[in-house]
Length: 156
Image (tube, rainbow, N blue to C red):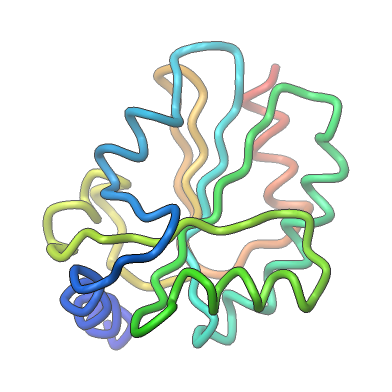
């Protein structure tokens, strides 16, 4: 529950941002999650969230495992404040991760959190996996083994 309050505060500050690669969840999903044979993995994280940053290497492993398969990974930062997008991506760059992050501009978490999953409390990290009309949601830290299992079930 305490992370939900953090997310709500983040959403309120995010509107004032002029960051690159910003999104509203409904627009992001419409633009990036297609009805095709690709599996889409979307992770919600923040640099201030200890479990989030601890799981990032697990995503890096899974990205390498699925590099030759129709799988796309997206990282959606819930960081806030001046240069939040830059802060999140600098964090990733300094640790040599192979991926970048988008930044949310949605100010009403009560509207977009249920779009991700009705069961989501708002705590991060959180990961949603889509393929066509199938969806899997995981709240909390995830391992590469768990992530690979979810992805492989969607691919088969």
